[in-house]
Length: 459
Ligand code: ARG
Image (cartoon, rainbow, N blue to C red):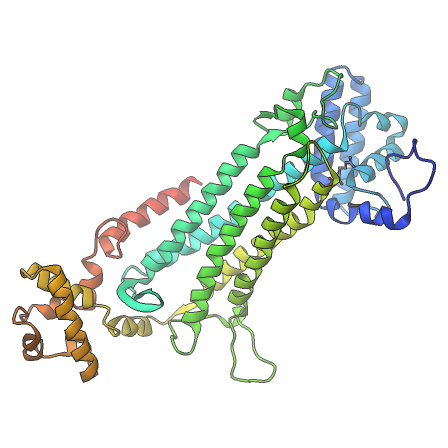
């Protein structure tokens, strides 16, 4: 047992209690952030004269050596310490002697851990943004290449109207753009420094909180010391944003699984992104898409877990809050893995454009356009809807598509039909003439693709 306290105790901590309480097994993950925070704190202590400049320099030197030794695996983080803060402080004292004992002046582990977690999640937000950016670049490429790749659009998983692959992928592009901007918003809101809040009530030392905040790249110090040590809102916001990213990836995965199925064959996943069966030799399974879909539950779990943990905690710090770490780390690592693998999977999959097009041509995806044709020829829409309904029924009986019926057959349902109906309901017309903003037509897509290009250039 190696802990930072004990003076007022007359008994050793029970070993089980110690183990239950200790956090080193997981908070070692932010050793670098903990040391950087301490370097800023020690620098400020020196500049403000709370400790001498020499002491400050000695502490900073010692901390830097610990950081580089851990990074270069010359120093192992010992599991006998209660937490990462204890490990760093004990190692510092070990290396530089009594001066090391001055590092914790005007600081508590409560503001220290609040800082570490912010620094860690802030760094990870940047990493996740980068992964999302890569994914969006993959989607952007797919969009540019598939403006004329026709496929059925679905509602209720029933064929509805034809769209293009670019248009379908473009829907996810919009979702990931929102996810990206959500992360930027969270970053902005969380980017205030809790260091200096002390245990809960600040300190009587003349700490320069503006200085530590600016040394660590924050917009400024937090404004209430009790809130500073007990606020975990930003983690909830982050886990909510991560849950939404997972939800988007999961929906997309579900479609990949459907498109990759034997029945659809719209796409084929690369061998490198598929797995086999131990018994059925013919199988090539979309495990990555399934895992991404499955891991979504785990990230939602983290969100619900922290929301529940936080709901009954009185101000200020309580040990319950230590529970924020494992689940946040796990959610972050899970989401990073999901984005990277999903990106690899969709950038290597092959499109079966012929099958997509064939599928877009049956299932009466042009029925709305047939009704619109009648409307343009003077039939009120409600009547046109019912005429085409009867026409579809007739075509189903004949086992034909609408455009496979002869003009005589069409005219027998409505005399308004003329030779130009075939052009009006061709797959090309149904897609290429839909050019209102946001629609699948190539003119509309061109504008969107240009906007996306601009967006990706500026992030
Ligand atoms: N391991 C603790 C946590 O994660 C660090 C803060 C400990 N503070 C305390 N007063 N025991 O929350």
